[in-house]
Image 1 (cartoon, rainbow, N blue to C red):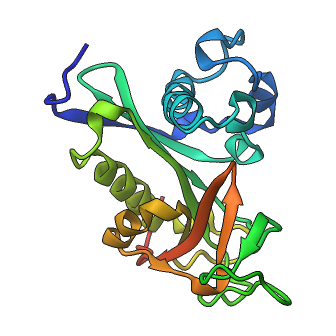
Image 2: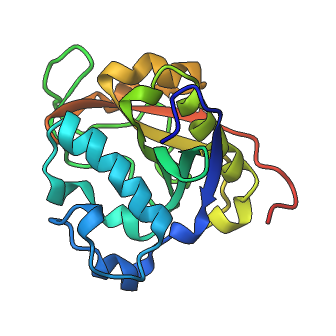
Length: 222
């Protein structure tokens, strides 16, 4: 097993996009190591192994809730130490999205309940965007700039694949994260700005906020 001092290599898991058929083969209440289908991409199982370690075992999210409907259409990146030790992952969910959902205990930034409609301060209600999420690192790899490699790779990919991400409209580089409230400073270091209008909501027992970033979409993408 590689040590945390080993320089990691990045694997770009575009083949991990499941689609409906493989998504339906994944059994949510079973850990990735016990999935019976041989057709599920190994890189997706590696990502789920990391997500299980972080979100299920550390943050006590029920295993059956860790897989969600966005997993069927997302792009995945897994970062490996050495040849084959998965240590971190991130996913990018392409359009379309809705900005405001009926989250549990949605409230204003000052903690007071909303009166009326929750409205974003930073989204016009129509522009398409991508969503980054499920950023997870094994404990021994935190604080080593590995998360930066994952975030940078996902954002760079989005910036160079505007055509692929233009679903129903042109992708103009808008990126959203639903950030755990304790990780606002981390995402701010990557250029994301807090959307105070969206307030605070609870997902799986954890307070979240919306943060946005715009990237420059490159010409002639693939």
